[in-house]
Length: 429
Ligand SMILES: *Cc1c(COP(=O)(O)O)cnc(C)c1O
Image (cartoon, rainbow, N blue to C red; front, side):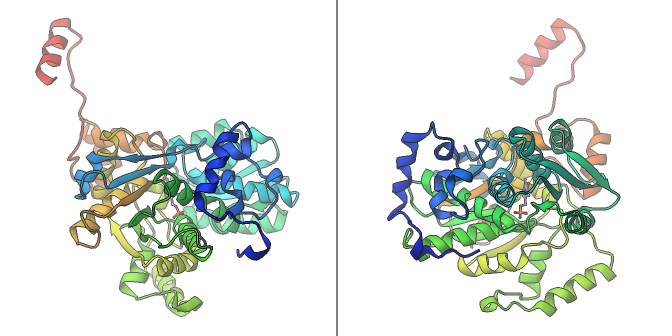
């Protein structure tokens, strides 16, 4: 999506947006998405739908800094779990939902690993503007997320298959029935997600950090971030662009393999389509399917692949993969620092650790890791990590190659006896 900026009124500097703080009683100034409306003006601001998304926090975490190996004061966590539905998806949903209403839709659909459906279901039930139809793969959705879709009253269709199967079906069904599709292919979602970067800059007093590190699933975030920085630079609102690191799960590493092994690049807008096609053909013929504890990024064919290549180009980006073990250890460190996140989010922290070890990220560089989803989205993974129950550990994590829980905070098991309880507390505290 490209704007004709010359015909729009764009602020002369980013601090101009601070003026909106004084007008927070206006929902469009309160929204962490729409208070930046001038940078995503695809419909008039009065028509923009908001449920209070984007009230997020950029936390400087010295615990996580130490864990990943950067100097104190240089590691920031952008906590998108604070959104109304508990993940960054609300940024994009407010924008896609706005467009859906603008074109007169009455039903909206998505295929989802969970958070998009939770978000869509929430926008539908809060605003009563549309009916939500949600496609999920069977057994592939964390309970925290499924419970949201059900509670919020969305029509939930469970397909016998994985995310990519659900995705293929929802496309067919939407075009047959004329239902508005809010999946990651929807370009308006990316417009909303650009504002995550604007809030990061805002929290850093409009100073551009050295690195943005983000988990890579369908690659909507990374594409949106690249677009945000490209536009800000074009508009003269920033003087340099940060570097971007996109982190795949090792069990869902399409981007990593295509970029780092096959040499796929943006190539001025002409990425090698045959290379991509061949990669997917081989994936299918070998029966390779994405498999990771980080269900939010358990994706074979990222729908925003090409846009993401552009973001890598714009931001001099790098791609890495991290194992489930690395993600869960990083997640425990994030939790110990006081925010907590779901497994996929911790890919950003695990990826940063790897890049610092490689010397790609310098110890004294300023790094922002995006925490994409709330800790309570996937309690199963968290409890299994900390558990003393070997069976539970094996069932949830062991089968995925996780061998140990280096930072487990194990519950202390005591008999129901006052003296024993007191003894245990004195022993352990
Ligand atoms: C959707 C999602 C992702 C993946 O983001 P993309 O934009 O699809 O790459 C990562 N983490 C969480 C928690 C998500 O919900």
